[in-house]
Every structure is written in structure tokens, then in C-alpha cells.
Image 1 (cartoon, rainbow over the protein chains, first blue to last red):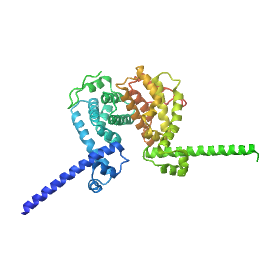
Image 2 (tube, rainbow over the protein chains, first blue to last red):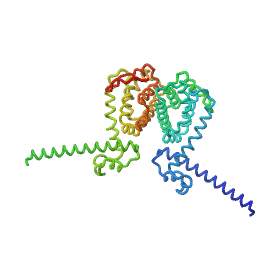
Image 3 (cartoon, one colour):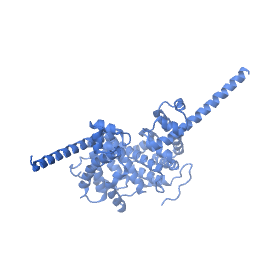
Image 4 (cartoon, rainbow over the protein chains, first blue to last red):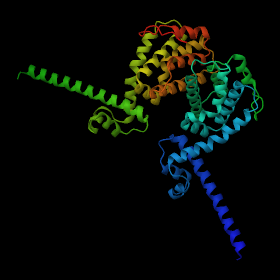
Length: 215
Length: 215
């Protein structure tokens, strides 16, 4: 075998190895999403993930050093893509109320379509995950479009309420129109005027067509 | 010793024994409140309570059969008295918005005065604990004083938001006026009109005198 051939073979091996490794990592992350959704962020041990992913402890440790590291990776893996998609969908919209409200509608649509994701985010989400909507929240307050008695209290009310909504959506026991209702209530909690709320609720959902007639 | 004296002595022993038993139970409940506030409802083991209360495992089992039973007892012991006091304080007030709002102000005042209680209730409270305010909530909806797009979504938003507020109050990191702001936001979320919200916020807090001037 020539040196060139040997190198190509090695390259091939490396690439195959990397692809296999990436597939294993995805497999661990998918299992972790279910385990964290079931057991919450603190209770699971490494054996829970090893069993759920059908791998050995050695393989687990090739990818992650601890449950904490796995939780961070799962959280990043599962929310970044969704939040970036929402961010992209709302970036062309005019004004913080419309961006915030349509973003929330998209967020709840994702949660309703994927109960495991919804439960996971509801159980492990820290206030840190609130970064994206926070920009429109702050801008809405500055412009007087949102009117609240205290901005920290308002953030906590929304954050706790949205988390509760995610857990309920994860359980699957929600009435029809729940996500839209929750969006409307969040905007109402922020003191948004009725006309602006109506504009948010009737706005075409980017990538999803016009909403069906409400009430 | 006459039979009478023997009986009196036995009565005395029984009474002393019962008093001691009640004191031990209170001591376990007080320790449990701290342990559950620190560790949440699921993580603690019986040894955590045994150690925190400074008792033997045998003594623990004289009073409670399991962590679940202790959690239920602690929850009942610590919330019933507070909720009954609030219930009593608001019963003479006119209309669901005033009762609901003043009740919330009293509830947050209790939470702010007692961070361990606040953390405990925030961590273990299930929707079942929401019974008392629910009556005024339902009546307010029926009378059109509260206007929401969905009653289940509204209940979840408030429940999640109030729990988040309790956890924040338990951490002690809250801005001045946080409890009042949270009350105002809850009423705003329910679509209460501004005049009614102002009436709630300026109402004398039963048993606590008139609130200080706001803004």
C-alpha cells in the first residue's frame, strides 16, 4: 500500500470514527432529554443515562464527564435550535409587542408539538434561558408599550407562568387554544393595550400561515 | 398508694408523655420545613430529618411512617394556619377583586416576613394549595370583573408566577415593594380595570394598618 493510500484509509477511518462518535453523542442527548424530562435535573445518575441510551459507562465518559455537563449540553442542544428559529422568524416584525407576542406563540406551538421537549424545558429552564425575549421585553417597557408596576416582578410572573404552561403542555392535558390564550394573558399581564394584543393574535404566524378564526 | 393516687399518677404520666410527644412532633415539623425548603420535596431521606431534628430513627417512626407522610403533615401544618388567617382577614371585604387582591397582598407579606416558609411553599406547593383564592377567582370571572382569554391558562399563569415569586422572596433578593408589584401584576393579568386595581392597592391591609404611599 502506498503512503497516499494509507493516509486515505486513515482519513476514512477517522471520518467514520467521528461520524460514529457524533451519532453516539446524539443518541446520548436524545436519551438524556427523556430522562431529564421524566426525573428532573437533579435526581438522575449516570446509570440512568447509560441504561436509557443503551451504552456502556465507558462510552458515556468518552462524551461527558458528569451529569451536570450532560444537562448543560442537553439544554443547549435542545433549546438553541428552537430559539434561533423563533428569533429568525420574528426579526422582521415591527415593534416589541408584536415580536414578543408572535415569538411566544411560536414558542408555545413548538411546546405543544413536542411534549417531551416541553417538559424538559419546563423542568430544567433557568432564568438564563429568558435572554431572547428579554430584549423585546426591555424595549417594550422603555417605549411604554408594556406598563408594569415592577420590571423584576413582571419578569418573574411571566417566567413562572410560562414554565407552568410548559409543564402542562408536556402533560398533554390542555384545553384547545391554550398556547394562544397563554400568549394573550402574558401580554395582558404586561399591560399591553387591547388593540395591540388583537394585532399580535391575528398576525400570520411566520412559517405556519394565518391563524384560524378565534372566538 | 391508693388506686385514686395511682390513677392520678398515671394521668400525670400520660399527660406529660403526650406533651413531650407533641413537642417532639413540632420539633420534627420545624426541622422538616427547613429540610424541604433546602432540598425540595423529593430529594430528602429520613436520615436528613433525623439529623436536622436531632432525634433517633425510632423516634421519627413513632411520629411518621414515611417522607411522603411528613411532607403532607409539614405542608398542612405550615400553610393551613396562614391561609386561614388570610381567609378570615378578607371575609368581610366587598367583591372578588378586593378579596383576591388584598388576600394576595397578605400572602406576600407573610412570605416576605418568613423566607423559609416562602421557599418551602414555593418548592412543594401543588395546584391543590390554590383552593382558597380560587373561589374569588371563579366569582370574578363569572361577574366579568376578571376578563381572561382562558381560565385554565390564567390559573396556570398566576400559579406559576406566584410560585416563582415565593422562591425569589425566599432567596431574599427582591426589590422594595416586590409583593405589592406582584399583586398588581396578577390583577392586571386577570384583566382587572385600573380603578379596581388602585382600590385594592390602597386598601387598608387587615391587621396591618394602611399601606404607605406608593409612587
